[in-house]
Length: 523
Image (spheres, rainbow, N blue to C red):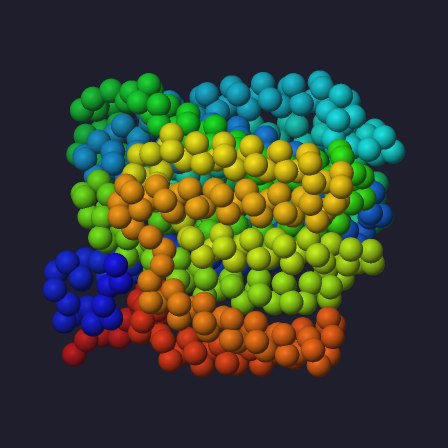
């Protein structure tokens, strides 16, 4: 599946077209990952400020509330986000750009209605919800926090759908600007100010919630401008269309994806809530800190999937499975190149890494090791599920998500009371491995593609030697300490850079560089 490293001007037409697809992904992907890195750093800073600025119980209450909000706001998209990403490029490509506005109405109105209903129910039922999610000493504050975040639920869901539509219209800029710049930057500023002013936890919750409204406004304005632009460039004005938009067809694809998204985000966030419910809110704070630290890998896959989804849709629509497979491989390689060093380092030096959250948080070091190893596998399989979705198999993705959820909830209920946060980490690791293995098998059957090839082994070898071997040696010499972490990271990164340079052609780093900077003029 690997495309050769010949120069584009010497390549045959099929290879030149594949190179164009790869560079289109690299442009969108590099922007998404750069935005992600900034956004992830800011989100990490928010968690650090919360854990250091509040006592462990109050921090756990707020972090549990954030997990609750994330589950409901993500589920509230109903799958419309992936639906518009899939359908908008098809409308534009087939000369039906005038139908984009109608598609957005079909997608957006149900999301708004359901979001408002969920917000009202959450607000009214805050007390019983808090009794179920928080230990008795923190249930009152939990109810207050739930009422604070509830009104933002429909805005968050609609923002996700609106930004997905901008990606379907061919640009990553609004998505990166809103999700990774505007919202997290404003949130950090407000939360830092609230903690610095020694405000109560409820006001810190308000500071965390307010940026959702700013993000929604920015997303809606950006989407409106893009829709007007595509309508002006369409062959037919927005008042005309070649055929009606079928709500049944749209939701026939999106609804299974909506259910799957509920399962997926629940697997990602439910463990924090279950630790709080089955153990204590303080332990939930420690586990939330560890899981938020390693969730960078999930964000990376999510960011990479943003430009990948419409490209996969286009390639598979024209029957070019070979190009789709090549694009999948390269996206997986680049994700591993970026994130595997982080997770190997976290697994070896979990104790000094966890102390960044404050005293008492080193208790989450074993959980961090388990989560880091699971994310190595998650990144190693890449965006298999995005490829599955863009192949039209949202029902298969739903089945995979249901399997992961059943495993996650069942194991959490069994393991958390006995093992605490380590049990939650094991439950999450098992569920994510099962979820990805199912997709690997299905894509192999459907498209004949798989993640493994010779380049894959190069990346595994380079990261394990640079960070695993050096990390183990530094830990033996300096212990599980900050000094060992710094020495291992410094020496490992030097060697890693040399190895990446050695294999730059095989890893298609030239295409990445060509996509993110102007190419020199040819003579």
